[in-house]
Image (cartoon, rainbow, N blue to C red):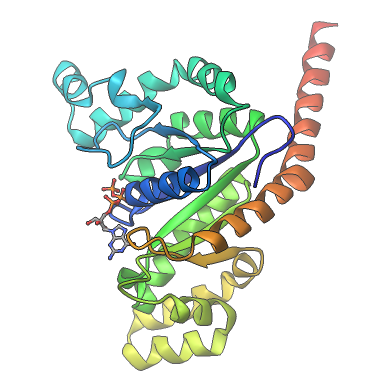
Amino acid sequence: MATTATQPAALILIGMAGSGKTTLMQRLNAHLHSIGRPPYTLNLDPAVAELPYTANIDIRDTVNYKEVMKQYNMGPNGGILTALNLFTTKFDQVLGFVEKRADQVSHVLVDTPGQIEIFTWSASGAIITEAIASSHPTVVLYVVDTPRCSSPATFMSNMLYACSILYKTRLPFMLVFNKTDAQPHDFAIEWMTDFEAFQRDVHQRDDTYMASLTGSMSLMLEEFYNCLRAVGVSAVTGAGMDELFAAVDECVKEYETEYKPEMERLMREKVLSIESIGM
Ligand SMILES: Nc1nc2c(ncn2[C@@H]2O[C@H](COP(=O)(O)OP(=O)(O)OP(=O)(O)O)[C@@H](O)[C@H]2O)c(=O)[nH]1
């Protein structure tokens, strides 16, 4: 299973609100326990009402986002972002706890806030992601609500979002089409691999400016699709878990051969430039 000699692989679950991140966390956790490879679980969503799994580290134990809202006179999104910012100041301690258990766990599973932009476009989200990726083979699992993506325009906007996260983090990345019990994800794979099939479906359903915009943007995404892994799962039934972990293993190899050498090169450059300033 996917670990380096010393460190367990970290899986960061990111996705639109309601895509099924928390349910998938529960499923991944249950699956790994069932094969005798328990993971370490982190919940970074301060606003989740109930967790269907036991988190080893839960942001809600450190900060109460409703109190933050009151104290700083903020709305819910401001409260969640500030709670995440406050938690980030202690993230070195969190990594310390993970390190202590590193030899006993197979993976580190990370659940992120429902409001996707709070994690993906905040300084805190970037700091947390980079801190994890500097010490663990790290993979982004972009969770997609498959039934809600069956219209080409919705599919396209979700893929553009995924693409922006891939290029921002540069981490090994996989699309996880969730809820395949409600709708199989074959249409999505066809749209990603057959440009003409996507164009046909765009124009069959809609012939407005939106359709031509969607069609043109799909051209841009061809390269993105080519370098991506995509799996279909159901967090509810557990279908697709073996494919998901096989893809995670591939991503871990990519981390070792591409992300890590580049990260180390950048760190060496930084050290050199600091040393040259000091001289
Ligand atoms: N049919 C089906 N429903 C699912 C599946 N996974 C999640 N759901 C449902 O989708 C809804 C949202 O699931 P959550 O796990 O709360 O999604 P989330 O992405 O964590 O939600 P936020 O934290 O609000 O962003 C719930 O009603 C789940 O029961 C699945 O595989 N199949």
